[in-house]
Image (cartoon, rainbow, N blue to C red):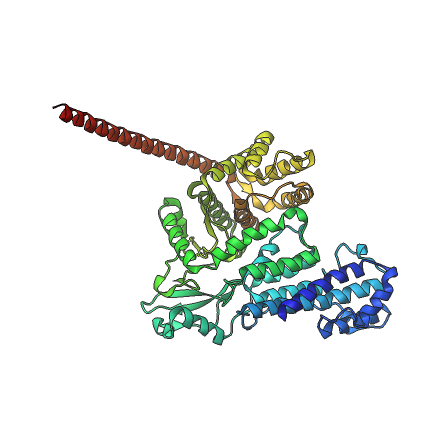
Length: 557
């Protein structure tokens, strides 16, 4: 029933988009719409909304037609739809709710003599519908909310402003599970005696995110801990959640075709499945801790908390608590502190990619906790950590070097070998691609301190070039670039937020030299291995030949 209702909602939404853009010739069809003949699959509130819109168009005031005041987001306690049927019904309700807003806007425009082209956006993309979408994503949580958060960090030229504003609210956090549902998860994961394994547990969550919520706890050994508890049903609903959300976005025609949404969605599904496995995150956190502690620079300036494996499963992750403020709060501190933090963040990012080839790719500011008492940055949340192939890293490093050195030919050559370009692009596309690369690489090409506080004009220009590339792009970017660019842009945005002054070129050249030394070391090691294998093969060959000669001598005797 829920699936059919969802399908009906999609069909009506598509029909309304055509009606709203039709003009006066289709007024009879609109009258049929107001009479309810086209709304059999929709909720009763949709018909009421159409009547209210008609009244407003005729000069009669209607409360439903008034623009609602902005509402402040306050996390609510609502159960997570955990069954497949429950989640399908959730999207069906979202479709019906969006239908309500679309009918209201479309009828108001049409009866007011306006065509769809009078507005830069369709009747689907209203502020009210944007708010409805944000509310539904916060209630559904899981992959739907995660994808909404990913969309919220898109460039302002990609999404309509009213949806961009609503999705900003999505980034603030999700609704929280009621205690009954929380306890069901804990019993299923840690057993009916789970509370006895802890000295204390706070049922009020510290934070609520897309995949799970975080609670404070006290271990029996006296350590403070945080427990990340996954919402029930989100892991097994990734495919359907993403497909249903993208269906809505497709109906609304929110994203340009040159974004190659199908490719992005395929990558997003893969990453989301990885993030929903807390056992993978536990291993990633342990690996990252070893890398941080094994490097003299990062060991001094960063810390990764210990995990508690005996209190962790695929849906519960327990780690030691660490102090600190979200990295964006450093913006209110002294210039000296802001410069130091920005430098540390960028140096870590370059080490992750070019030296370790292993990167935590979620740039959420809440994943970097600055401790003013020690000056260290505590790192948390490693569900999005991933490896990068050596050949990709080497080519990407040389592309960034070409951008920093303003070498157009090398930028195009490396971009083509990486898969950003096909070699058949128009001159307009190549010019925009090269100029955008050079502008993004400017911090790495500027000697001395680069002032991210003066970066604003460059950001606007890159956005303009991005809009040009969306029109002329011939191929989707390589899969590795989605997570990589998310992290790199996050590092730059953090430095811009802090208005930090960072020796970017020095840091980049250090990373470049370290990468070249790593390649030389790996080449020497591989040569030694090949030499040893060759020597071993020769030794076995001689042994076989010696054995054969001895056999012949015995036969002759």
